Image 1: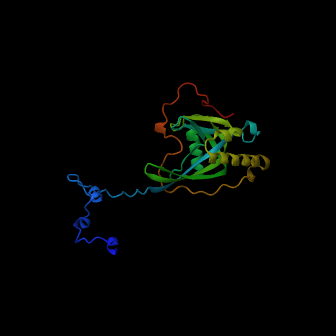
Image 2: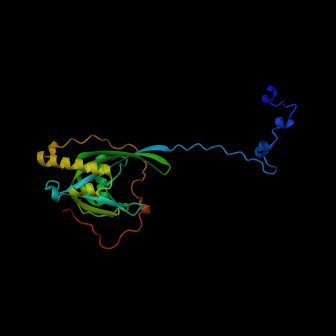
Image 3: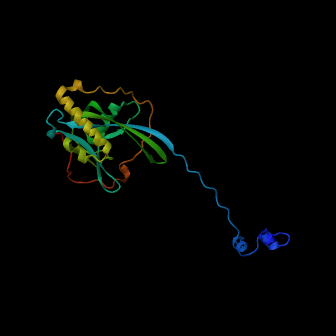
Length: 242
């Protein structure tokens, strides 16, 4: 009886030793169809990380007057879904520029107007992947007083420019982080009107950028994807501040 539970002896049962039978036939390679080795799995490529710094500003016209008469300059770009996204003018800090100088230049280039820096609104930073790079972007924003010029959208990367009532900024700005900056701007404007310019926080000290940096695009559509420009009269047009 014990022999019934014992393992078969390969010497007495060659079929068992060779693996013959229904199960072995299914696993054996078929003649004429050699098995192909699988290629080794490719390790994911590591993206190069770069750090980029930009600066921009919220330019307010009528900053010393009643809140209901104050307007701010915004830029609009069309995204891939065809939506107009409104945001603050901004751009990369070029070699030899401070953040404040960049904010003034970018506002002029993207909106056609000039502004005087009054105070820092704060900085925004975020990560994104583009063109084979992992980019860490930091943007410094400033509250600026309108000082001249005419609102115009001649910059090829901007679809629209407009004076927007300051009270409407929370509804018009597309990005939550910039809506928070608009809230800070409202607090600083109240402080400016109640206690004067000396009551504003001092500007953080910045140094001119010593090296050039990469220029990556995100959040909005790239200028070469924005589609045809509008022609004829514009709803916002070009013109002086109120």
